Length: 229
Image (cartoon, rainbow, N blue to C red; front, side):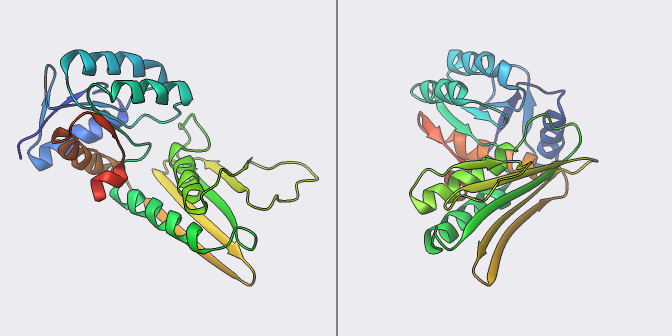
């Protein structure tokens, strides 16, 4: 299926990576029109990309991280008019990881098994925990069918762990494309589910797969879990 992408931020790191992957896969990059508008820019630019997509009646793929609830409300509103896919991480491997995390959290009891999420990224990443780490935490909450207390970046004393909470820790440095570990820590055993991103190319290829999926959809709000089925 022929595909043309309109990159909202073509000069950004992900914009350049998607353009490189598009050339390898025979996907066209256009500056006007296109089958899908792709936004990997910044939270402050989200309203602009939404307005452009809705005005053109074009599906919108958003991979921007650091979005708050207000931004997500904007995406839900736009999804009434156009197909919208929001993914803090477009890796197909991470999409599968989230599914595995949800399944593990469903099986392992909350009282005996603690969940900790560790992530590492390059020194220039501005938000922490990463959108992917939070996405994995939500997957765990779905598996447990409950909202969990978030324990962020512990530092100090008197920090005894609360049963059922989910802990997050972030590391920043170098050129790390993205490492994520979800630790299920139980009595006398540990289950660790991990993903390692070796380059941004995996996010670019996943974004193209997501765009192919999105092109064929009716208005609505979608996720990478829909892409992998």
